[in-house]
Length: 283
Ligand code: FAD
Image (cartoon, rainbow, N blue to C red; front, side):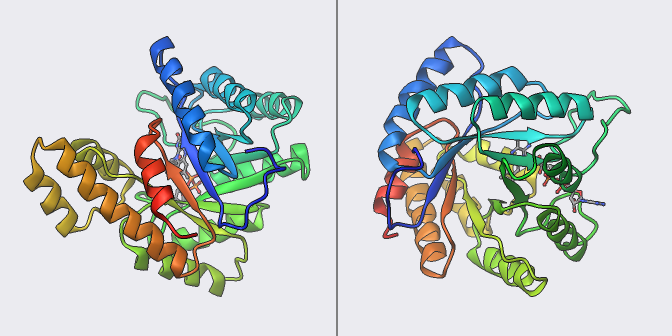
């Protein structure tokens, strides 16, 4: 929502991806209008690493602004030149965008040897600060269960601390289903002097095979008991949804009760599950 909205509740934010065609775009407008009722602090829009959805991200961010959201584009540096990134940052500044999610991005399959001018998210954060000063509030990614390519959880934490020290204002985590992993990560980051908010990223459970695919890609663990229950539901979509809603709502409440500063929802461009979870929470 616009920055004038007043709420005493812990903030939520919502993530979308750029629609691939007109039908998906129309659906996203309906979804976004429905989600306005949740009064998110901001919405974010993903970016295809290597620039594959660059115009889609810019257009979707503009659409979200027009609907009245405070919108934050994701920006990844992999494969990009400093000149490309400068141009994108200038476009967002002209559009009155004040928040960016700064990422390295995943290396797209088929990308040749040219990985661009900046190799890690920390380099991008430094670059944004050099280029745009304090104009943007910078979010970075955090991995309570460790980034899948990290050498060790210790090395990954050191790199996370480096991103924050380079000028990030807050962090959003990869999704997880084990609250202890999040609180352990936060306490290790605090012990290293990190004071910025670390907001849990929340993945609603609505589709078993999709969840397994995403989790295998990004290194998020699906606990055995959840995998087992989902497998037993088979094609019974209603039971998967009801179970997922129950599990994720309890996770969110637990996170908020134990001190998480807010929640960031990976909406997958759907309104119903995120709405049901948020409306069930005491914030
Ligand atoms: P980095 O922080 O750069 O870390 C990447 C790896 O390099 C880690 O293993 C880290 O330990 C290591 N590392 C970091 N710095 C150094 C260093 N100086 N020296 C050596 N090793 C280092 N992907 C997209 O393509 N588009 C999106 O819109 C998108 N949105 C996301 C939003 C969130 C909230 C999250 C959690 C992830 C998102 N991703 C997105 C996925 C993300 O791009 C991948 O996880 C990517 O592999 C890592 O990006 P990063 O910004 O975390 O990278």
